[in-house]
Picture (tube, rainbow, N blue to C red):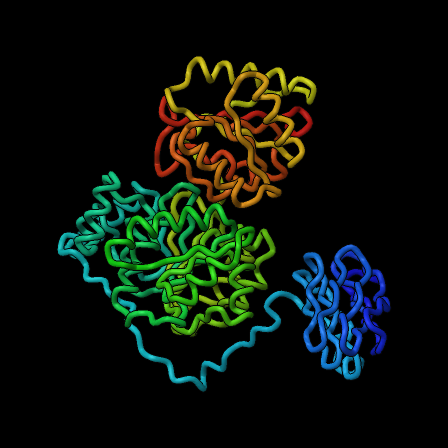
Length: 528
């Protein structure tokens, strides 16, 4: 069977528990379930690795198969099983009526979501412009503004308000200012200084900045102000602010910032991502939250099931948009945005500005202002000292131990190290080797459960284990204080991945030298 096709469902059967066959399918499709018995167990097993599951009972549809497969149809009134995550086919129909109605194949994720006809809907008006410039900001000359932007490497495209230069000029509510001081912030980063006036003015915007630039706070604080100026959320209503992120780790870090600054005004949030039980996430959404932080796939699941909706959403954030597109989330992103009213405010954040991101911005943002911090070309953070050690593959293990000894003898107390390797299998092997050397190491990769990931990050953050071995799953969005060294045990597949890896150190304008040093190693086969 060709790529992505579905095995056919079995025909109607009157024999209890029959197992008439679906065909074996290649990856991306699913074997159809067999026909169900009239009063007994439903459809049979499907074929293939990602095949349909067993059929259901007398009137019910069958249970879905592993990962991609649809379930077999139920008996009597059994319809087709649901499609899988990657477009697998539904199971076969059930008994008397199943042959006629069963066997419908499922589609891609999001296919059950239909774009609302916004032109026919009566939308409740909402306010999104809350910005009143501080007198000091409003009275600055064009020359002063230009000099500040040059000093901070801020480039603006569009009618952007003047940047602020300190927190008092942002005119945030008192409770927000108290939390800013409690967190120990002394001055806004460049992206915050220019981003806050734009976001608080209700404009759509694109923010392009390197990792560790403070962008999370640049959109969370305006989100809280936006939410506090809207009617309250009732049970069953969807969120006012939606933040889409590419990975569960980044989503959880965003949630922590939302917790820190939202608790004093009772702005509730939930974090929705795959790899964790759906029950608690669904309960949060059903009770009603003002902010939903989500990875696209899990949010689509809840939207398709009707667990939540986006009819109240008026503030949309796409964080690490370039990364989400790299990971193949563009269809899901487009489906999600279709569910949101067109007069929303949208903020897009990206480390790069390729044509794919530009296309997404032009499709969904209106009259947006672009701000860029630093070069438009993706480049390594200049605050990081980069050291290249050319070596053969068989030398790496010895040299890694040698390097860890150097770091252990010279590093400040509490310094943390991330070691990036190419494969999941090698992550486990290198971690065992490092532990044999006597170093406290933990590891993280895509096969780890959410509970394991949380434990590993907790151990690393608290310093109980000062070394984290990881694949690129941790290369984006991981924000842990005190990372002084990044070691590329295996050189990454692209310069972009390399830059994001070493961006784990020198975060939020911290400089190199004794406070932040990136240490990077390349194998001779990858050096040109």
